[in-house]
Length: 342
Image 1: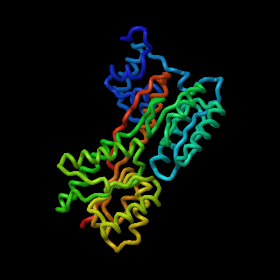
Image 2 (image 1 turned 90 degrees about the horizontal axis):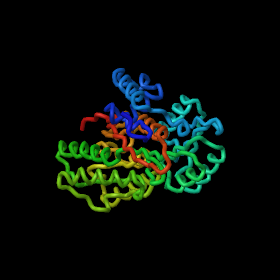
Image 3 (image 1 turned 180 degrees about the vertical axis):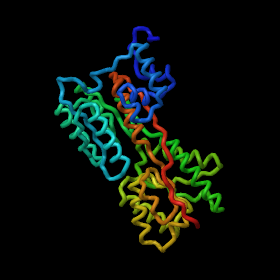
Image 4 (image 1 turned 60 degrees about the horizontal axis):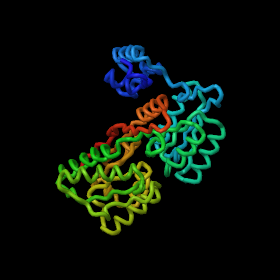
């Protein structure tokens, strides 16, 4: 069953077993039961791994005794549940592997990202997860020069394996739900404001494309001035929504808020409006926070699967081969939405 002289990988086992690479990695790392992998699936994976002569890449796992025993991650900040959840899940997995995690926030500053990466490499980290950075490619080059495996998480790059959310699919699904709400209320489906995020990053581009595709499916298009993607911070989002409100003299029929920190900015703006104005607007947000269920207006959210993203990232790390840079997309989920009658 072995494929010639080429070393068997978890992707070969996934193909043979019909399971996902993430599930294969969990089972082979002894975490199948913890992640509720079905016993028959786990048995099939283990049997096929033995038959196919699978042996883990211990070097890529960061088990090299000549190095530090440290696993590194950089990320923009801890201000929302997405990045905080990535950091927490990463730390748990690193500790499970007998290593010590180091997680550093860089505030989306390219200078900080380079400096922190250089410092972590100087500490001889076993591997680095590069999460949500301005541009991962220069950091990938630093890691390659140091001989340290790295994985791009959230924003992809060409210089290392990448794990990202299915941003386009998530935005498409969210937009379809919002359109259905507009139609149920017999409100216009072409009166939108999409704001938050950064127009040149992959996540925002993909979400805009999914948003446009969902509207195009109904023959609806929106003008370019319906988009304002100049940053993720709450202050930027508050300003963008305020300017749109003043231009229209009202809120649009529907808001697509790109980023949970953008939702914070929208709430700041909402606090200065007359009571009930937000309740008359159909609102969706990409990403998710459970506290949103307690807001006094209807809100539908896209939830990124943090656990699956981290598991897939470690699966790529376990099969790390310099120059082999696959890109894995993880499906999103719909988060909690309030149920407010209007």
